[in-house]
Image 1 (cartoon, rainbow, N blue to C red):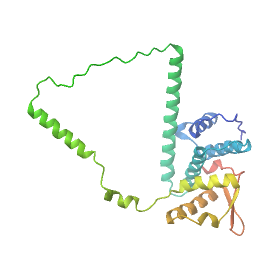
Image 2 (tube, helix red, strand yellow; image 1 turned 120 degrees about the horizontal axis):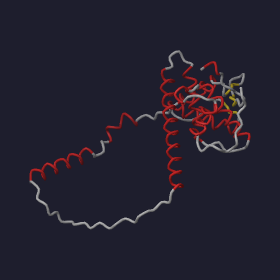
Image 3 (cartoon, rainbow, N blue to C red; image 1 turned 30 degrees about the vertical axis):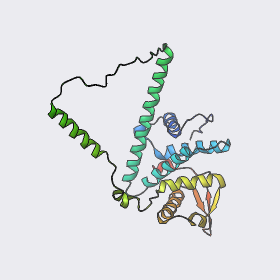
Image 4 (cartoon, one colour; image 1 turned 180 degrees about the vertical axis):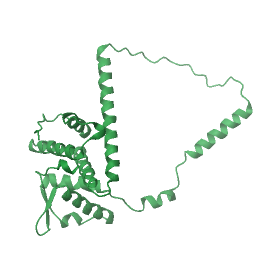
Length: 239
């Protein structure tokens, strides 16, 4: 496979990097190959680390997101992977359109001088001088009262069943674990489960399984330590 060369830093965010990789590999946004895209994305992050540049949380979160999409796509039922892939494609298309619009506006701004007129003073008359049917006034008042009632916040009891238990996603724990291992390279397995509620512990355990399945981490023979695999590469034929 062709070795990618980057001039660092050049990308303002992970979406811009993904668009660059998609264009370089001559893919279509609506038909991206997650395995190949993940491999090139991780290669860029490794070059950032080799250049001793700080990796922002946004890039780490996108890496965890791509790993998760790739992982769930390997399951027998991978409807979730298709949904997540569509969401990513939609974000890329929207970001691409915004970049094009910003470029067009920049060209127009630089092509011609811009004149700004100061706002004119508007005279206001606080006294209503028209004639209105009383029934219309009554209807307008009732409509305003109804809208005000609909804008009232729901009672606290409506949220009791939602916020009574904290939900921790697997993706958030993948990001947390990747950031921790990028700094230290390894960690004690038991240290990952010393604190947190049941939701956080379960999400952490699933995050370890997902990263091991993707080849991003390995376990020691006695299962006491986990190591970050910096040389791991995704297989294109698994897509």
